[in-house]
Image (cartoon, rainbow over all chains, first blue to last red):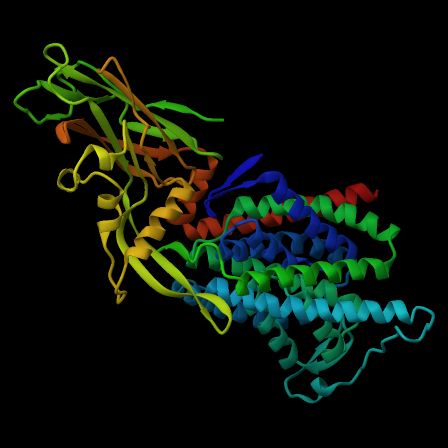
Length: 304
Length: 263
């Protein structure tokens, strides 16, 4: 079933799009990751213009984060005070990210920069995950190997501008969460990702936030930052395709349901290796597209 | 699903006709075309539409026998748009956009249909005079910038657009019945630009245009996709807020469904 996407101005297979949404939902159901980092490159592969893919992914993440946020809110695992600090950084990051996005798009270099960023990011994440999975498989019999102790005092605790975060049971400087929020905001605008892969480890290891509140607080921030990003993209470059975002969301809902069920049946190590291989595969495909001589050297773009 | 759209209704209705006859000594032939509706709505929901164009040759007596065969050329040209053509070059082992040519007024759509290859029908001078052919419509639109040889760029523009379906050369696209009635079908892609399309009809004998007619078709797209597109261009803030609002609604519904499912 062909669907014409009004902003992307391409006809795509609606079923294929739904499958991509489902796959990403599956990942979030199985691993608890947002999946934006895999969604956006997959959209490139099916021929969605990169700028539209990134802006629409931000819109889609706003929806999926809202769903996740509601679940965490009901479980009271959201630190709103911490979320607010992250959000201030996130909104600033997103606003500057959208400017960078537009400048690159005007120069015709957006596709190149976003591909390079993805190769770098997916290569790092995929590599780390693969190493981690292999290590876990090897040390499966050693029960102490996987225990990671949360450090209550890191260098981040020595910085000024300290604030008390009751939900997280922390008294820590507001600077590190602000900076983390800022970085994640820029990434949301340029790459169309929520940024959980950076925020979650940073909050745990850098700030020492309890793991159970980290995810809830992160999705609270993603919800606003990606929503803000999508509106800015719509105004600045008109590249948000709402139809694309909604189809992906629909697939995501189905996928998340399946993912939760599937995760219960499969072994965690196998799941992690599967995800790692997927990430590395997407990374290699993106890298190959940059290095191999393209069949068509020329491209067209409308001038605004 | 293809939709047939009858665009040009002929006929021998002398009054309501935009016909510019070029009288020539031997033949009293002229091309006749009218438009049944000057407002065409395409519901371009997925694979585009097909435009059905037809007309007739009006003549006072029987077809001339002392001249070459009758040929018809039909061109349809969409509103011009500025477009950037970029070429990728290899730098540090990576293929990246480098040189850019800005074409100020390339037609957003251009289709040329004829009974035979246009280059065989008309010489350079005639084509230049009437502005017929891809060469005239696109390649000569010229550029700017500091690129010495723009030919590869304009060639690429035509090549890519032909692949996308916005430019087309249909050499055997026009069929003529009884040397009088002619018709063609032109594929319109889904990503069509709205606006005034110029349809031109040329009657050709012996490498000469002996009659021509022109008409304007106003092309509008309908449907939810078009509504969304127009909103995103005219009211981007409202469109952006609506997009995020719909995504949040979908997220809320998903959450509600999850909770309902767990009960």
